[in-house]
Image 1 (spheres, rainbow, N blue to C red):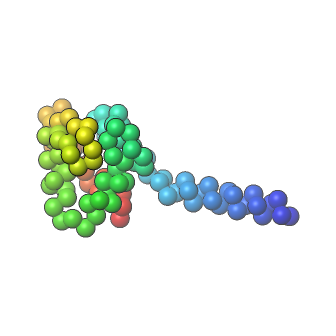
Image 2 (tube, rainbow, N blue to C red):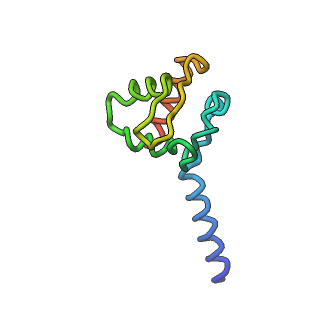
Length: 107
């Protein structure tokens, strides 16, 4: 009985942990090359997208700032490694969609 209860508790813990970041990288992020430097839940070369979402939560100008950053590139916010420009290789519409996705993670 004790083993069964412990197994059920462990299974519930795994289900909860798995659902915390049940969001997968959208296909657009993979197609656009974002996954070479970013992950949803951990830093790779660039910051984890969840960290970006938390940093800008409640910032009314965040979407415009991030669209510009993704489009033109830049550095200094998350460390010394610069983010290369993604426009025009990635369309402005796709960049906007990706930024909206990132900002929606911490809601």
